[in-house]
Image 1 (cartoon, helix red, strand yellow):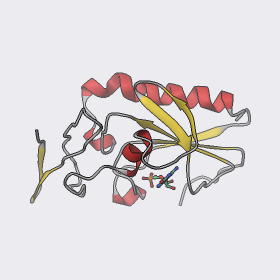
Image 2 (tube, rainbow, N blue to C red):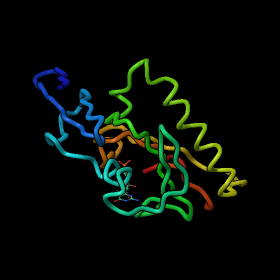
Image 3 (cartoon, rainbow, N blue to C red):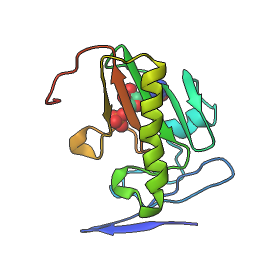
Image 4 (cartoon, helix red, strand yellow):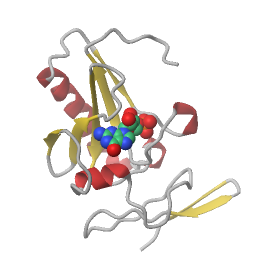
Length: 147
Ligand code: 5GP
């Protein structure tokens, strides 16, 4: 199975494996090594440890290893979508769910004074893991605009 995208002068094919349900997704930036699992897939597969605080069939939430606020949680779909640019209309429900999980975790983590939800998409946004994820940050005042 394979997926391909053509953008400007690049043509890329990305292989993203998730357990036995190996799935291939077009990668808008073409920077996914062939056959590589993302670090988040490894967390989902329990190949590397993480402080997981919530999980269901569709997504998982765990504390960021390099927190930028007293609460910094990542909400990650189990099915790999490299980044928002690669999401399809069929992903509407999953994308909505990620936000509602952020809402619920903000309540669970007592972010009653406010919180920020962030999706970094692509190089200019500082995306470092090509597996769509929502940051939930809170428990301190957050500056605006972000750097
Ligand atoms: P991005 O920069 O792609 O929006 O966010 C990626 C986030 O993943 C960063 O905040 C980074 O600290 C976090 N991260 C990267 N590797 C790991 C890891 O192995 N474990 C955990 N828990 N977080 C990670």
